Image (cartoon, rainbow, N blue to C red; front, side, top):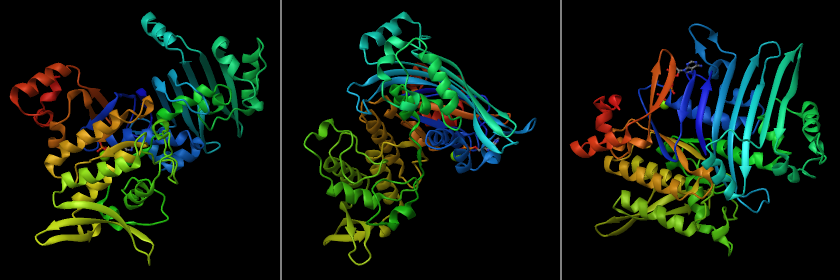
Length: 473
Ligand SMILES: Nc1ncnc2c1ncn2[C@@H]1O[C@H](COP(=O)(O)OP(=O)(O)O)[C@@H](O)[C@H]1O
Ligand SMILES: [Mg+2]
């Protein structure tokens, strides 16, 4: 997983570092401190891996909105980023074994006024990869983490009205990466010879594309370089609007839940109809017609459906069961609920239930079915206080059961709820603050001491935060 981010030049993230941990990472801090900017940066990062940098910038509001604006320099022209992480990555692209990888990736994207575009001005990527466990142990016990199998540096500059792109450094451990080249991409095909580094550099200079992260180009030669892209692939920032959930969907909508909660009915409908193939336990994605953002991990869809039913009943006692109902005239699916009443069961569409119930259903369904959720903003809105801590437990559970792939074992939350924070652990917190126009983040350093205070006085973390007591830790 991504372990640390350093950003300079994205909105209020000016020389800002964020340290991530597995599990939930709860961003707290004043309004305007930069919590949403951190999340938006992560989503922006994910966009940059799938489309040219200039398009990603445009999609997130354009140069004038995402480049930092400071009193001293006005609108910035560059965003510099450093990302470090690693872990175990599930086998993909036909590979048999899972892979252990570590990376350290620095890049700067720049806006050129002359040619009015955004491009990767320089990139510096180092990574280490192995499927051999002994090698991982060795690297860790030696304490020398500056051992890389691939090191590549690219730089680009504007010359007249053209961007000149250059591969400056390419070093690789040919013992480990060489065998994998053959036949992968003729454009980059490297002969098994001593000058293959030079060959790659030459090819890169011809074909390399400074609109994309270098991992893309490199992936043509070293397939393993693609593995850790999954660390930046999650982009969904849920901010569920109960009104949208109450609306329902056309039954041709593909399953999967959008950031505002659209798609709950379609997702429940698909879950009910899903069939797993016999070796489902090994499959990470049950094969039905769902879109890429939708997967129940290794769980059987029927079990997921049952978990959703149970948690809805738990949150709202009068509900007996929920079902997606398709109207045969309008082709619309809407969630309905059987509610207990004095003289039997009454069936109501979700549009008549409470906003809290609609939001709860959407939250639970998304965390149980979606692996592309990056963050949940203010999950507490509309949710009753005791259910807020329950929600935190459910989210924690989902993350720890996600799957072995280390890209999937963390999630961000933002919250202003003292109640929710009361059930958080100090190790989960990231305190975000605004200092002289720049966002700063910090983790609680003396975690054990905070736990002791909480145990001693019986109040939770939220109480400590509200009273300003966390500052001392
Ligand atoms: N392009 C920019 N340059 C500098 N600062 C920015 C830029 N865009 C937004 N900001 C800062 O970010 C703040 C909003 O941060 P946000 O992440 O929305 O806060 P919150 O912590 O409440 O989610 C604004 O108040 C402003 O100070
Ligand atoms: Mg915000």
